Image 1: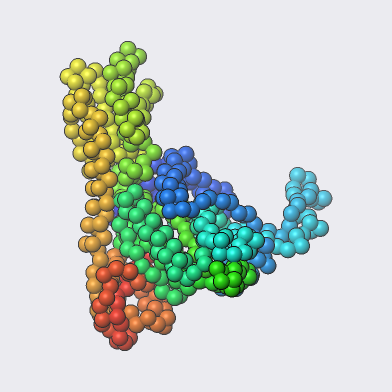
Image 2: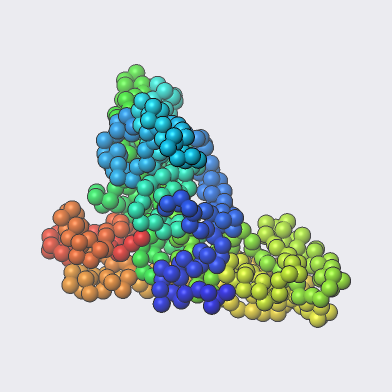
Length: 491
């Protein structure tokens, strides 16, 4: 199957699309800009969702669900938010179709079925949620509210790309309400840390935590925190955001609470989210020219066993011998697939599991069985070895941990080798097209930020939260700067 995959250095974009196709993750649908997530791709998304959901609940959050449709008047209530999403909105104006009197079998919109008020198809849920919170919150006793929603959203993108940018996508969005500014900021930073921990410990994807510049903030936020990751082509990908919303939405929807002294004040808010964009990040962080590469913690199948046999007798002999080891692996949380399909040749199966990024593949035939051995292949390095069958359980468990760590260290090494400090704008312009992260001083002005974007198509990805106290001068304007920012081309 590797011959069906374009090499990264030849055409990175086509390579990405080839991986998605060969690994059977998703495909374009007949609905403009939308995708069909296929079972194997959705199984990976479920692993992402389940782990994040566990982490959210461990931090005190509960799941709820809010309507897909937002009345336009509610959407308009928070002006900055409405303006920020206006160009991406899908709007429902009618509620009925009828038969076309001029063409049999054709349906037309019934002009008499126009809605009294148009409905915006959810691009984000702040408006509908804060209108609801107004009913839930009266006093400090009702706070904090820590709610998360798993849902789909629609943003009418003109240029789409599977997982990275589609008109409809899956995500989670947290929306919390607090009695104080300090508590809301603490929540915003806590959830950023949750995202960073998930990205690094489960996706094996190193990230930089930082703040967005004012022009890159979420519409209606006072601060937007983010995690930025580097893909294998040197471009940045925003992998998650956490927003401190201040009292903006509370004021827009008149959400007040009575504090312990009986005084009324507006509630403080946060929102935070990640989406199926993480699937794109996973593909581009680890995969190679042979197919998908998955970190074991997010792999739907940890171990694929390919028996090499002729006839049912040999197959049953192999299966009976391996069953105790399969049971032991399964009991320890390892997902095992024993592939007894006799319609596929072993070589085809090897290629299929390689393309789908299964971390460990085991192969065994009658001679191996006789010698008490089994072949082990690891997906990350493509190394093969033969071990004693009696040691297979311990070996596989250790190997899965080793693969998880190796993928993170490999990605971290790549990022560090492609991140450099620059002080000269001319040097930056000469280098930026080759990709990578550039740490440069910025004077903090929107004018300089816009110039960088217009000149190079690179953007300020974030103002790092850690290790960033260094005075200098802006590489563009020469004005004073007290910290470096991360600048890169991005998805």
